[in-house]
Image 1 (cartoon, rainbow, N blue to C red):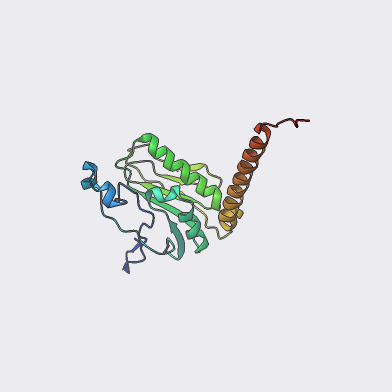
Image 2 (image 1 turned 90 degrees about the vertical axis):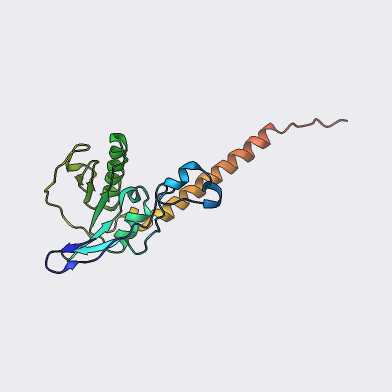
Length: 197
């Protein structure tokens, strides 16, 4: 949620990709019988392009683990985001999980050629350049703030524009290769009977 000191609360982003077994319980008729089920939250996914405007800048927001899914930051960039932000509550993360999340953020920076700002409550916060390297970062479970200049970008990379088509093409190639290998193997191992004269 954007806060302006003069105008108060402004645009907001509601997390669209929620975590199964943490933020909601999938198939409650099946999994609702588990003892763990009573500890699961009942979040509802939000809607919208994942973009908020702050000080006139379109900021793409991928909350916490949304950064793992390429459709969240990609949708934000396609909707005009010039910068990506990852606000995250890492209270249940260990250091390894925080490093993994940071690595995903670096991939998204390269993928969309955008600066990515990661703001973790207890995990690692960072400013990541479009080439994927962190310009500045905090330690794990460290109280600090980062003050670094960033640049805005409106360029659409090939990954932003064509990622789903490329993914489906690669899946198609893989399935075709697997089918061809199976047919070739079956043909090669089929016993041949000699003709009886």
